[in-house]
Image (cartoon, rainbow, N blue to C red; front, side):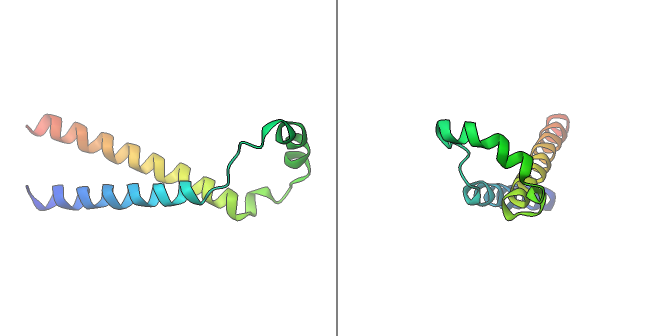
Length: 83
């Protein structure tokens, strides 16, 4: 194993731990039937929804998952052609 493999492995492990923590910090979306009825009013009147902590966690999850996917794909392709 070379230094690049170790660095990328550590980076993937840290990124996966970050994703686990961010997903666990998010609130549950399953509010049942009452959430389905009142959910439209919440999205219509919630103009500052993009500034809440919940929305920031959703953004972190999307960015982290995208980086994790691209990095894993790049490492897989790299090692597929290397060996």
